[in-house]
Image 1 (tube, one colour):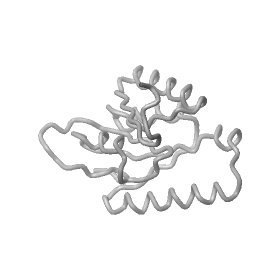
Image 2 (image 1 turned 45 degrees about the vertical axis):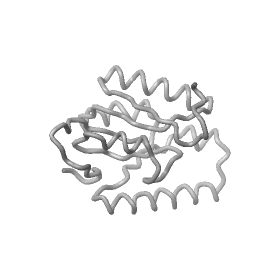
Image 3 (image 1 turned 90 degrees about the horizontal axis):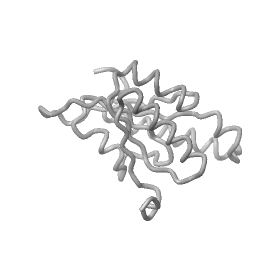
Length: 150
């Protein structure tokens, strides 16, 4: 097992190699997308993408950056308890994922649904490139009170 991989409970059906993309839900508890990534997985690579769009287009002050960095450090510390690490990568998801899919032989990608306009476009593009790479995408509602897609 490589560094930065979450160790999941072993069973005979384990065939998945998952990436869990942390976005807004920077937590291990109450995270249905992370649970789905672990289900029947040989390994799970947790990642956070520092998207340049966020820094240039969102209203991000020094306090918000500090909070994000502290939260990412806390998440990494939590993952260490499971013999894993948070992979923090810089770039757009369109640049990052094709490389990671090949490098980690990924079969599944999980993340939480995001309803913001930029996120909808980004996620549609990620789903398309995942499909092209043969990676199954699973999304879950976890940061809104109800499913806005229904």
